[in-house]
Length: 320
Ligand SMILES: NC(=O)c1ccc[n+]([C@@H]2O[C@H](COP(=O)([O-])OP(=O)(O)OC[C@H]3O[C@@H](n4cnc5c(N)ncnc54)[C@H](O)[C@@H]3O)[C@@H](O)[C@H]2O)c1
Image (cartoon, rainbow, N blue to C red):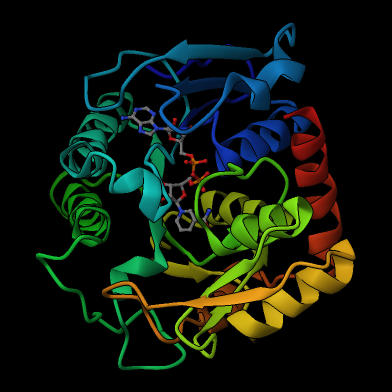
């Protein structure tokens, strides 16, 4: 049963040692909440939480969400899942289990506690979209048997489970479809485009672009994204989502590479490589629903968010 003896909330963040999770933990603590962070440290790191070791309202539990968890909390943010292709393709069966069994376990916990639960879903549920920009009512174009499917279909099944727990058990759910997000504490070797380009530029290695670099992505700065997740959690009970959270400003991979070269002052060259299978050509959120339902829009332009991100990676590079 959730606690009733004080007004402070105790919040569970699964995946709290990861990139987004650790920023969310910081913000929840800054608001005065107690935070229980659960993570198996597969892609996350205790380094992301070192500054919280002696924080009186913070607790870390090393745990794999594919196993049941018994804690007493008032709200759950379910972020546990490897998020970059290199990591989620490392053990694809474990990735699907993390999304699906993890969702079942966290939904079961929320049902027992009668507490609300938020799922960190993804723009990958749209697959290689035929519709641009993607609105939440678009059902997607996903390959069910490809090398990205463990992530895409795992996240789609997790959404199904969230909505079935909502319909069948009356659970209060919130589903966020997160688009590419970047910022300090991203894993330097996760193969995601922002971390890749910056690390390559800092090392003076060629910047690898897949295809001709004309595919576009939109990049949301982490502070904006966390603000969106917290607004979603605080939204009225009847608002379940799914809701897109991302920055609609589109950049080609070539533009991003050039921006990183300019901001790092690197002399790296650009190298072109073949496109991997199922790589979406374009990805851009339609965020009208987030604007109307949550009063949310991203505030940090790419050039502004890249500065602290580059500084972070420079410190990682210097320590290596
Ligand atoms: N960063 C993005 O651009 C982005 C975009 C879309 C969706 N998301 C979603 O947001 C969430 C967080 O992503 P991130 O970028 O912070 O990735 P991340 O890899 O930095 O964080 C994921 C965390 O989950 C933990 N984890 C993985 N499997 C686990 C398991 N079985 N049990 C317990 N913990 C486990 C990892 O150790 C890590 O700390 C993920 O669910 C991801 O799918 C992120």
